[in-house]
Amino acid sequence: MIKLSQRLQTIADRVTPGSRVADIGSDHALLPVYLVQSGRSPGAIAGELNTGPFQAAQKQVASAGLKSAITVRQGNGLAVLEAGEADTVTIAGMGGVLMAEILEWGAQNGKLSDVKELVLQPNVGEDVVRQWLTNHGWLLQGETILEEDGRFYEVLHAQRTDDFARANEALYDPAFLRRDAQEVELWRGWLYRMGPYSLRSPSPLLHRKWAFELQKLERITAQVASSDQPEAIVKAEEFRKEIREIQEVLACTPTDRPSFN
Image (tube, helix red, strand yellow):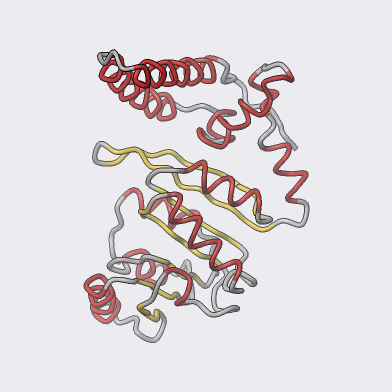
């Protein structure tokens, strides 16, 4: 059986057993091959835009002897998928803005009408993806932070739910951060950025990731503050405010996980 990286294995582990999967931006089709080889999925679609990775995916599927179970298609985003072909869509390794654009196009063109589950791994812009899910009838079921080869990744697992509005309101309620009512929208924004599950049940990896982000922000702030230009002074203060807010959010994370149902 093919061996996956920690990042791809984390994605694979979130796929509901028995699901037909469409892996968008599949690269070498490692994830679909593993899902079928392991028996987790009866079949899969590997979609890839660029010719090189598309051809590599074809070779990978053929060498695994899975051409009857995995279809490799070349196309842009969810254009490779027809309605009713997949229960689960996986998208990994791209920015959150692009990921949300792919999902939005898919939603508008009926590609997600029968999809029950999304497993998403944005490289950056996780807040954009979480906001898209909230706005389109999806409920985040869980999120995982992992570190691999010196980089931090987040894997988001979402499913459709009839009661998504109430459930999302509870999920993104910042009351557990002990902020007053006037700051609700500000701290809700940090739940989207840092993760509602991650902040309710903070792990060492959450603090490692954001300690790294704070170091980057402090370096950038020092560089900007070295200029005496008025716009640089304003920008430096904006960065300082962001640093203070991150520190305050982390300081307010609970030691015991509260219920939000």
